[in-house]
Each structure stands twice: as C-alpha cells, then as structure tokens.
Length: 94
Length: 113
Image: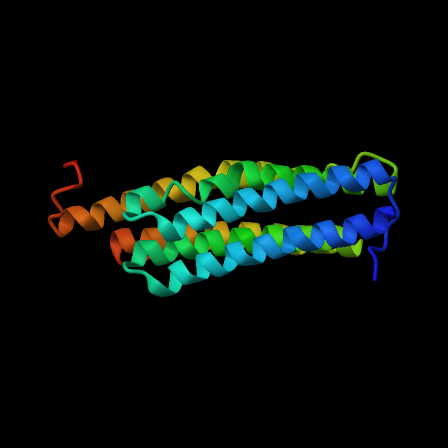
C-alpha cells in the first residue's frame, strides 16, 4: 500500500462517516419537533459540513478548502446566535 | 485514483487514524442528536463532535499540511481556537432560549427562574 492510497481510502471513509453524521443532523432539522431542535440540527449540520470540507482539503491536496471551512465556521456561529436570539425575543436586532 | 500529495507511510496512517477518530466522534454526536428523547438531553450530544472530534480532525489537518509543506502549518489552529470559543456560547444561548420558551408555556419539568 502506497501512502497516497492509504490517504485516499482512509480519508474517504472518514468523509463517509461525516456525511452520515450530516444526514442524521438533517433528519433532526426536518423532523423537529420544536424550533430549538431544528436550530440544534442546523448547528450540527454546518459543523459536520465544515469538518467534511477540511478532510476534502487533505484528500485533494488543495489548500484553498481551509478558507471555505473557516468561513462556514464563522457564518454558522453568527447564524446560530441570531436564531437563538430570535427564539428568545421574537426579533434579532432590537 | 490517489491523493495528490506524497507523505511517508507512517504519516499517512497517522493522518488517517486521526481523521477517522474525529469522524467517528462526530457521527456519535449526531446519533445522540437523533436518539435522545428531550431537548435538554439532545443539546449535549453534538458537543462531542464540536470539541474532541473537531480537534482531532484539525490536528490531522495540521500534521498533513506541516509534513507536506515541510514547515509548521499552524493556520488550521485558527479554526480550532475559534470553534472552542464559540461552541459553548451558541449552545448556552440556545438552551436559555429553549428554557425561556418552555417556561412561557408552563412546562412543569423546567425549573423556575
């Protein structure tokens, strides 16, 4: 087994695990039952997507995926905070 | 089809082992999100992937890029530090919003303020 074969298949399996995790989080986001469950599902979904993109960057050897993962992490944090604030007050900016 | 960048064999196995452990932890967190019954139990589950799973995958990425570029590549630490700071903040805000909503509806299982 050459190192590149190990990387390709091993990181592929890790990506499959993360994809499954994303599907489970999406199931929680669609099923609910309440708004806070959906927001929690969305939070988990974007986090797993960010990890998937990091692993894809290693698998393909392209460094640009790091920027995409960083942006998803930052925007996801803002989105979850805004949604939690909306649940609490009924509006985001008072 | 193979990965583009050549690493020594031990480094490839190390990176793959770290990434697999991280992926398994993230999957465990998501399974908990689906299986657990109440919201206040569910809110704990994804933190498994958000803390340890995320750190392991970031560590794998740091090892990979450091070895393939031949110098310390610490930029992935940015994601690690940022997520470590923000995950508790988001989940505390979300849990407090949920407790507020449950109190308004008169749920007896939520402790009073």
